[in-house]
Image (cartoon, rainbow, N blue to C red; front, side):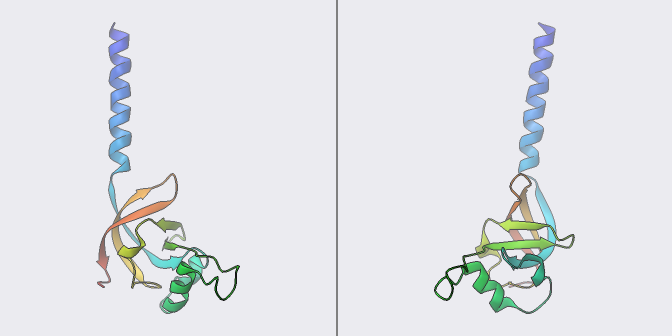
Amino acid sequence: MMKTIVVAALALLFYVTSTAHADDTVRMIGWVSDGHCTIDHMKEGGAACVRKCIAGATHVNPDWKPGGMVLVTEDKKVWKVDNADALWGLESRRVEITATRNDKVGSVKVMKVLSPKK
């Protein structure tokens, strides 16, 4: 009986910690880029290029598929942005955000843009 209670308590503890970790909000600093150029846009300028690559340009070249928006952190890790509208207008800019992060799939959901202001 005692063994069953201990196992159940450990299982509940594991569930609570894994659930709480998934919803933690983190502060991140990085560059707003696109899924094609990623680290090449870790500098000011090039916003028009980033926007085109996010949207794609298959009307110009069938191989230019949409690349989606990404956040590239200072250590050059690339995170897919789940809610790109939160960073729209900040393409090719260094930003500081709070976000929920999904490490399993390498994505972030932006909660708030701390800097620069839109």
